[in-house]
Structures are given as C-alpha cells and as structure tokens.
Amino acid sequence: MAEAEEGNTGNGKRRRKRKRRKAPGDPRQRRLEARRAQINLFRMIVHPVRRRVLHTLVESREPQTPAGLADTLDIPTATAVYHATILHTFDTVELATGQIAHDDKA
Image (cartoon, rainbow, N blue to C red):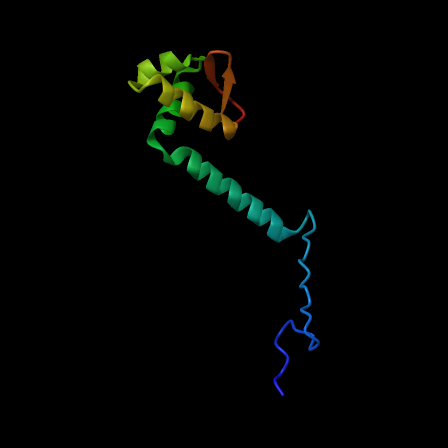
C-alpha cells in the first residue's frame, strides 16, 4: 500500500494550507515594505533622463513647462512629459496644468 503524500489526507482529498496572515506591525512585513520602497526609488532614479529632469527641476527651484524642460535638456517634449509623469507617480515632482515642479517633501 502506498504511503499518503504530503498534503493528502488518505481519502483522496487534499488539505488546503492556510496562508499565514501577517499582523500590521509584523517586522517582516515592515522590512518587505521598506525593501519595496528602496526598489521603487532605485527604479525612479536609474534612468538617466529622469535623473536629468529631476536635477534640472531641483536646480531651477521654479516650475517649468514640459516644453521648457525639453528645450533645457535638448530632448523631445513627449519624452520630458513621460519622465515627469513617472517622477510624479513616485511623488517626487508635482504636476500642475502645463507646468512641472519639484516637490520639496521628497
């Protein structure tokens, strides 16, 4: 007679393994969230155009239009808008109507 496989009750039914729910204050969960934040930060600044956009906005300390930013960096306007939008998703820049500004809280 064959031995019962792991997870098999012997009567042909498989037991479901319960997922362990992590408490909100679980140190492992906090470490995982911190690691994800680091990865997101890395993804944000790894692209050279995004670094240049962010550097230009920080140095100017004034809101800029996508066209002005594109002229300053000598890149297409669509590229400036795309990378500014990516920076906005990471709460690094603030997008206003027709202007892009560096967010000081980041």
